[in-house]
Each structure stands twice: as structure tokens, then as C-alpha cells.
Length: 279
Image (cartoon, rainbow, N blue to C red; front, top):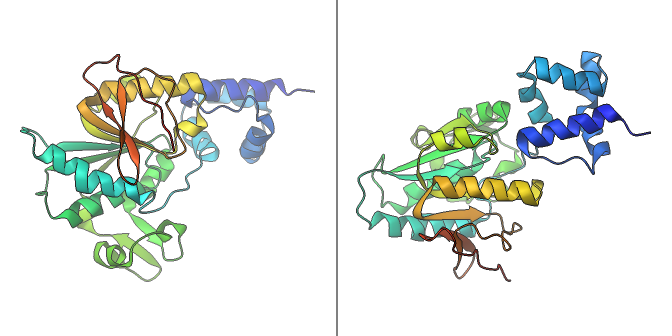
């Protein structure tokens, strides 16, 4: 028999953060079973508990999300951004810093990688580039803010040796990100389905939202892409994961192909069709 409490739980999770478990109730049950048993509640009672105790979302989100990431992930995109896209923007007349938003930043590897590569270019004065990093998981954000990673962590699986030596302090059991990199990144909580909070970020020039859309259904993906589009400056750039596609959406982006990767540019005309991604 179907567990109606588990069905209800999947519905409120979907409404809160867009993660869809309706067809994967067994997976959802595995993720929450320990917490529900700890509280001595049924799944239905747990739904009521969340309504009365909104702070429980912090616990539940940590159980549901997959925070697998590492430094220098999909390096072709990182290099394209820091060596080419930022150089283009730097040549424009600006009265404010270039702003990069790392959405769903997890434990900080992506925004810190961007900060390291920006410093490596030697082209940008301190404060000329701002990095805002957000995530829905408040607990993983605390780890990101600390900037400390175990020596044996998978976070370093693709980190070039020269970056590791230059931008990390080697401590007894782990690596501490260098303060010069740490101060380049501002971390904060954000739910990608909360348009009001997204708007409060202000206008940004580049958005990294990689390996996030794969967890959303079609309608939620469209909602998120619209929100990103609204916050992106005219002519700004959007980087998605290589496995993510927005080919059938007409939301004001044009695909940009480079030699080793692809990404999107916001068009002035909001009716511009997102071009098809092909091999």
C-alpha cells in the first residue's frame, strides 16, 4: 500500500525547493527514515512537524541534497570564463565591479576555483571582481565559509599542483584556503525557487548554475532559468553543466560555442530563442 504521508512529504519538498521524489518514493524514504525515527514520527506527522518547525527544513535539505563537487570541475568552462569572458567585460566601461554568482555552490569548491583562476590571470585589481556564492543547504555553507578541506578529500581530485601549493595552507590534517582567496567570495543562503531573495542579490554579470537543473522537472527548470535571466545583466553569461539542456526554452539566451566548451549569453531581445545544443 502507498504511504500517503510519504507522498505528502514529496509534494511539500517539491513546492519548497523543486526536488522531485514523486516517482522515487523509496529513495525519499531511505533519505529521511533515520530522521523520522529519531523524532518518533510517522511520515504524515513529520509533514506536520515541518509546518510547525520551519527550521527543520535546514535538516531535511541536508539529507536530500547531493553535495558532490570538487575544485577545478569542468575546467574548460572555468578557464573560458576567467581568461576570455572576464577579459571582454573588463574592456567595457564600468562604474562597478564585475559580479559573478555561483548558484548551488555546495561546499565552496566552485567559487574558490573561480577566485584562484582570477588571481592567476594577474589582470584584475582587488575588488574589481566580486563572487557571490549561494546554496540552499545552510550546513554545507558553513563548511564553505571555513574553507578547510581534509587532505584525502575528493575535492582535490582535479586540482593542479601549482594551484594547491599557491592558494592553500597545508595544515596537520587538511588544507585551508588562503585568506586572499577566501575574502573574494561572499557566501549566503538562497533557495533558487525564491524569486524575492534572488532579486535581492542585485544584477550580476556571470552566473554559474552547473549540475543543478538535472534534479528539476521541465517546469521547475523553466522557472529557475527565468529567474536567472532576470538577474543577469544585458550581455551577461550563463554557464550550465555539460549534461544540462535548455534547448526547448525561449527565454532570452543565445548559445555560445568555443573551442572546448559552450555556454549562454543573455540577449537584449528577451524573445531570443535559446539555440539548440549539439555535440
